[in-house]
Image 1 (tube, one colour):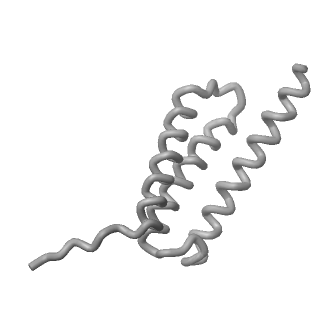
Image 2: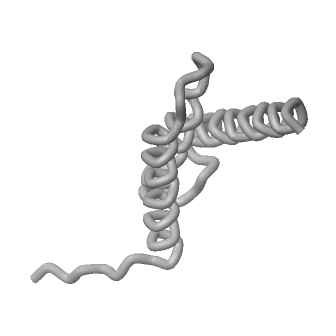
Length: 94
């Protein structure tokens, strides 16, 4: 007899978060104009961040294994660099 174990709140949250990041990645990939060669990196970073949340459901922690932490940190770095570039571009046009 197979009993299904209900998902923990942590797992439900991470699945939802993964879906959000993957939708953002898709929207960015469809919307971004490739004016600069590095612009493809932002949707890829959002997709990787979504996948990292799926992995986190299995591992139970965002810092274990070590490479999951490195992946998440690299994605956050890309987010910050893209935000900074967007902010500077806005100042140049404003």
